[in-house]
Image 1 (cartoon, rainbow, N blue to C red):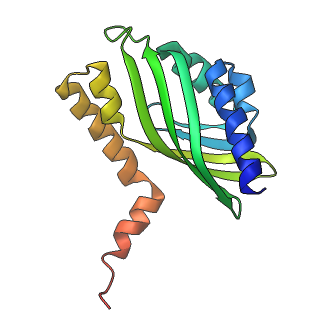
Image 2: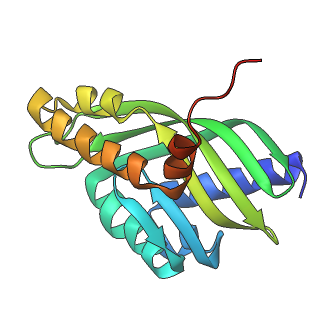
Length: 165
C-alpha cells in the first residue's frame, strides 16, 4: 500500500464511521484488530468494533462527520490528523455541537486495519459539552490510568532519561 491507497482507505473508513453501520465500519479491520478509542476504550475484533461504533458512538452522537488530512504511509503504518464533529445525544448534554481534532495511527495488513490508536484532546470536547470540572477530573484520572498501564508506557518509563551527549 502506498500513501494514495492509504488516503482512499481513510476516505472509505470515515464514510463508514459516519454512516453508523457498525458492520460496514468493522469491515475495514482484520478479524483480530484492536481499536483503541479515547472515550470507549479498547475493542478487539470486528464484532466489538462494530458494536462500539453502532451501539455506543452513534447512540451518543448524531450528525457525525469525520475527515482525515495529510495522510502518510510507509512499512505497514499510516498516520493522519483529523477533524470530527457531532451533536451530543447524551442526556444532560443533548444538542450541544462538538468539533475536535486528533491524530490517528493505523497498522495495516493486506489492506485492512489491524490496529487503530488515536490521540485526541478530550478536554476540548468535554468543555464544549459543558461537562462539570469535577467530572472532567474523574475522566482525566481514568485516561491517565490507561496511559500508565500500557506496556509501551511502562517500558518507556523503565528506560529512564537518556544520557546527554
